[in-house]
Amino acid sequence: MFRRTATSAEGHCFLHVIKLVSPFVMVVVLQAAIAGFSLEVMSSVRAYVAGEALWSRSQKNAVYFLNRYLHSGEASQFAQYQAALAVPIGDEFARWALERDPVDVEAARIGFLQGGNHPDDVPGLIWLFLYFNRVSFLQDAIREWAATDPMLLELSVFGELIRSELENGPIQDGRLQFLSSRLSELNTQFTVHAKRFSTVLGEGSRAIKVTLICINIVTAAALILLLIWHTRRLVLQRQAFENALHAETQRLAWQASHDWLTGLSNRRAFEARLQSELNNAAAGTLGLILLDLDQFKSVNDSCGHLAGDRLLRDVSRLLQQGRHARDLVARLGGDEFGLILPQCSPFDAVDIAERLRRSLELLSFAWDDRCFAVTASIGVTCIADRNITLEDAMRRADAACYRAKEKGRNRVQVESGSPGAVAVATRPREAARV
Image (cartoon, rainbow, N blue to C red; front, side, top):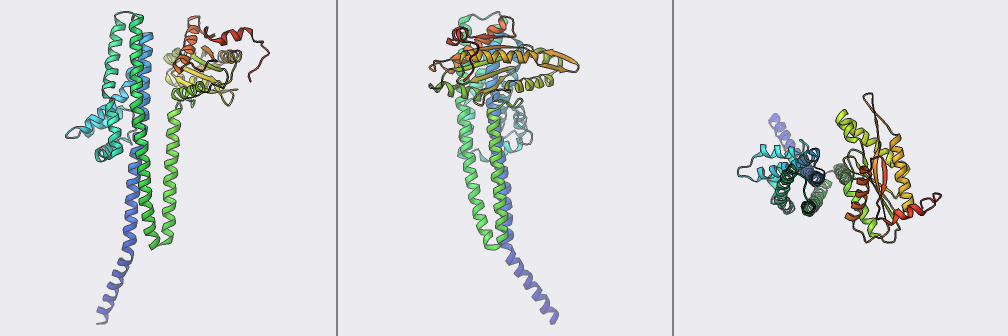
C-alpha cells in the first residue's frame, strides 16, 4: 500500500514538472525554430542581394568590354566580354530551371555557380525561389529579373554581330557610332531593371526584418512570464542578430562602391561623385584625370595575373599618396584609374598629373627576379562650365588619355578644347592649389 502511494506521488510529481516546464520548453523550441528560420531567410535574401550586385557589375563589364572591342578590335576585349556575360546568363539559366515543371534543381545549381554565387549560398537561393516566389517582394524582384532576358539575348547576339563585322574589316564611322549608341542604350535599360530589382530586394529585406523582430518580441514577452533570465538571453540574441545584419549591410554597401582588388572607389562611385561635382555650379574649376598604365598587359602576359594584381595595388597606393581629402581616386576597370580634383585650377591639375607620371616612372616593380618599367599615359581636362554632361566630361579626359598613348605613351596630355589648357600656359609656376 505504501509503495503504491509512493509510486503514485512520484508519478504525480513528474506530471506536475512536465506540466510546469512544457510551456517553457515549447517557447524555447519555438524560439529556436524562429531563429533558425530567420537566419535562413535573411541569409538567402542576403545571397540574392550579393548575387544582384555581381549580376549588375558583370552586365556593365560585358557592355564595357564589348564597347572596347568595338573600338579596338582586340580579341582579349571580346574574351573579357564573354566572361562577364557568362555571369548573368548563368543566373538566367538557373531561373529557367527553377521555373520548369518539374523543377530541375541540379541545372539551377549549375547556373547559379556559373553566375559567380558562392557554393554555400546556392541552396538558399534555390530554397527561397521555390518556396517564397509568390511573396510580393520576391515576385516583383523576379519579374524585374525576367524583364532583362530579351536585353541579355540582344547583348549576346550583338556581340556576335560586332565580331562578325570586325572580321570583315574596319567598321565605318557611321555604323560604329550606331553600334556604340545601341550598346549605351542597352546598358541604360539594364541599369533601370537592376536598380528596381535591388530596391525591391531591399524593401523586402527590411519588411522581413521588421516581421521577424515583432515575432521575437512576442516570444520574448512569453518568456518573461516564465523566467526573467531567459528574457535577457533573448535580448542579447536579438542584438547580436541586428548587429550582424547591420555589419553585413555595411559590407555590401562598401562592395557596391569599391573595387575589391585595390580598395579604391569603383567606376559607379566615381561617376556618381563626378556627377555630383558637375551639379555643384558654385564649386569652381574641376580637374579630371584619367590614367592608363602603358605596360600592364606585358606584366600580366609574362608573369601572370597575380603579378598584375600586385602591380595594380602598388599603383593604387601611389595614387593615394598626398591627395587632398576632397579628392577622389578610383579604379575604373582593368589598368585604368581616374582622379577627381574639386576646386583645382588647370595649372595645378596638370602639375598633379605630371607628378603622378614621374612617380610612376620611378616605381620599381619586380616579380620573380624580373624588373618592369612602370609608365602611364595620362589625360587631363579641367571643367569650368558645369553645364557639361558626365559623358562629355569623361569623353574629354578619355580623348586626352588616348592622345597621350598615340604620342608615344608615358606623357601627360591636356584636353585641347578645355579652357584649362590656356590657363596652364599663362599661370605662373609659383602658383599653388587652393
